[in-house]
Length: 160
Image 1 (cartoon, one colour):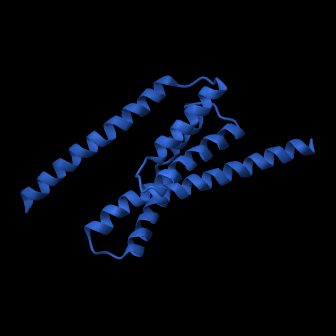
Image 2 (cartoon, one colour; image 1 turned 135 degrees about the vertical axis):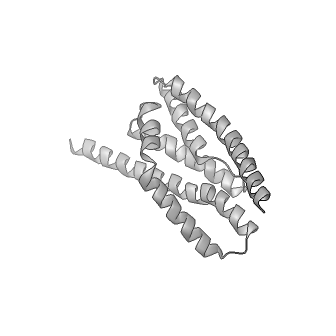
Image 3 (cartoon, one colour; image 1 turned 60 degrees about the vertical axis):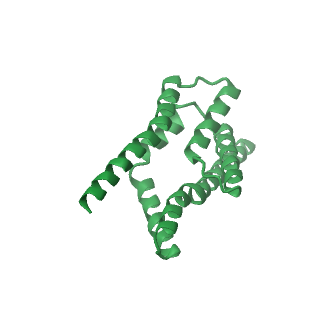
């Protein structure tokens, strides 16, 4: 019984460490995408920008992240402690390697890919409808972002 408790505790810490690693990658990758635009577009202090955007990241995590957490953690593929650790740690390593080469990649896409990889390897039931919806979101997000940016730019240039 004591050895089972030790294994469970070890898995819990492994998951916490891998989650911390992916959080590090979010700051090193996703936040850097936004900061890069601001730092090279304006003459603002880097530490102030990083602080404000980090605060925004924290507020996003505290407010709108619950639905994404539930979707990724429960609805995509059923994960156990070891598969949760493996998917997060593998995703984190992939993003870290991309960051080392200066490549802006999506941490979210890496995590979803890691979870799907574990699901396929374990032969788990994968929520295919959710996978297609996620892929559709990956396609639509840049297109909608581009259209909204162009619209906003037109409006602002018109008002100048």
